[in-house]
Length: 556
Image 1: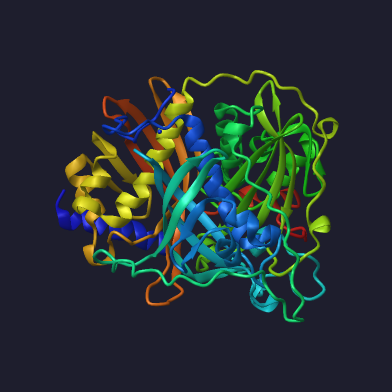
Image 2: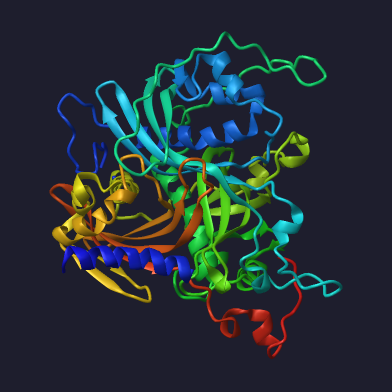
């Protein structure tokens, strides 16, 4: 296959999406630990992930007068742009009138972690969403019309309730292990830019010591006591495997709800994520949860619910969690891709004989500005309320180390593709020597072998680069298979824009992966891209099917 054909194939993938729509210790994804570098344990990776996942919520909410954000950093930690160093200056970054407990702006994905002699470094993609748009714009005119009652959920697909902000790119981090656990030593933000290496960072402008914020009425806000992030390594009730299983449970949510894991029939798959007596959105128990899933827009290839920033904490009888939600309609119903819904979930989980399950879930729509914390957040459930007993879940043949290595492999693929590093060789080396990338688009393509994969990743080098960011991956599901593993991963291509432009959601779908463990570590043997498509309404709209074609009004 010629380079010209490969480039055309990559362009076709994006064009179609726009229109129709890493054992006990771990080093790097290659399985090799560099000389002089101490390998990270699975719990190290988990703790660093939890640190990064907490970052967005602490910054967006401004909780604890900004000190929850500052306490994610070491005592001499620093953020580079805008520059802030030390607890007071860092806390000041997480203060402002538009913050609040339900504010969700910073969506972080593709987190890669590398061990270093002094600790670890990392990088992660960032995209900012703005949910504060006018109500008339948010409805998009897709409702049922005056006097017609609430619209059917299928009619609302493509509604615009949010928009891209003007910030996207990646974080570059340095982590250090302190007596209180892993913390940020340094964090820098690199805006997305195509082309060569961005300009080097100028010397920071160090601000004066920062005092507590002074509101408009000139009264000083009280300084709340610090509530430090308690590291997972200092919490004995959840193991590394528990964290990974809970994370996969939540990552499965979109796959089960949107497509039934590719089968289209989603009710049983969705209800199986919950305990038998769980409740969500007014539905309680298995049968009602089945029905809740079935009335949602869906289809075998449909992709909609993107979840990220998942924070997990142990609690009596189980665990609790908080994660960001973005519902993205990737070019469905002939409309341009749009942000349909945002916010965050707050969950409780219990361990059952079948594994970890969701006991309770509540969705908090995004709102900026101060809100009543007691009204917004339900009280923590007691052990009696959560119920359940710690039991042994079915064992997976994948170790915690294997699972983390595969997760790191997935995240690295986005950087390698967007940067075209080493003229595509960095991307090709993530595949086996005979690995293949297949697209199930209107113009299908099969790209096989490292030579073709490198040419594919190179693409248009004028629209790639070390700082370029476009491929956002989340909702990783990894399952063992005979001698290997398989995966399903949500992808959305977001062109952040340059020079202050807002950019656009170009489309999305999911990857179906096959992974194998080689002497160099886990690699992708085959990756198939399936674009998001809403299923035929006459088949999957339950209300219309049962009523002979007449849609039943229903609130979304």
